Amino acid sequence: MTDQNTSGTRGERGEGSPGRLTVVLGGGMIAVLLAAIGATGGWLLAAEDVPEKPVAVPSAIGAPSDGPTERPTPTRTTPSAPRTSASTPSGLTVPPVIGTDFTDARDELRDRRLGWRLVFGDGVGRTVERTDPEVGREVRRGTTVTLYVAGPPPESDVPDVVGDDCDEAADELVEEGLYPQYRSGKQGTVTRQEPSEGSPARWNDEVRIWCGSEEPSQPTLFPGL
Figure 1: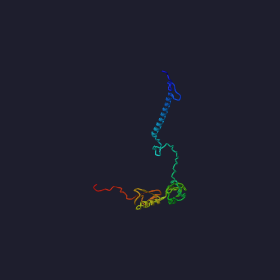
Figure 2: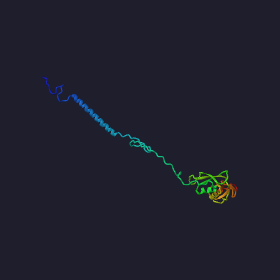
Figure 3: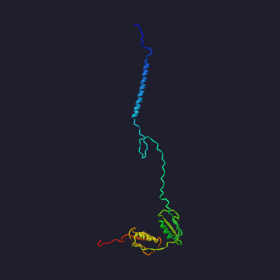
Figure 4: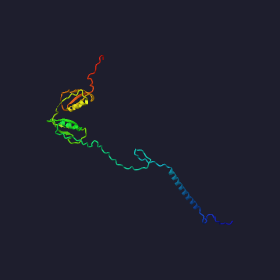
């Protein structure tokens, strides 16, 4: 039998037809590309299914928030202004009472609705030597002004206040330079006083008064008990 070469001779590659190695390499590269494309698509799909991790942001009340993290803007705290009601100028000052009789100085303070306190000295006379606060100092209404008198406290007579209203009795004692000492409250009628009417006293002395119903000093005894 005569050997006959054809276009498909074994071991030879015809012109224009791809070899087996080329086909194999081409198929491998296509497989790699498809695998890469598939992996990329799968990663993108998987990324869409992953929930976003919440970010905790401090809020005004300290609770976590799901919003994006923002750097808080620093604020400068302005201190509150101090209250000025106590320091508001009232236009009221300690009157010029130096060198005047202490009773006249007391009346001047009372007319201005200021309180007073008398401090007597060891010298001679009834005149005011100095004041506290000092003359001309701005004060608020109701402030007590201390009057320092040159001489000792003068004598005064204790008035009769039994039977008077407790408030009226106190005003009368103060007018005479004496101070009431309440022994049973400040309401009602004065039922008793010590010292009694006409007793000698000096300015700034205290007079004890009992207002209202006086409680019995001894318990009531009942027969047979």
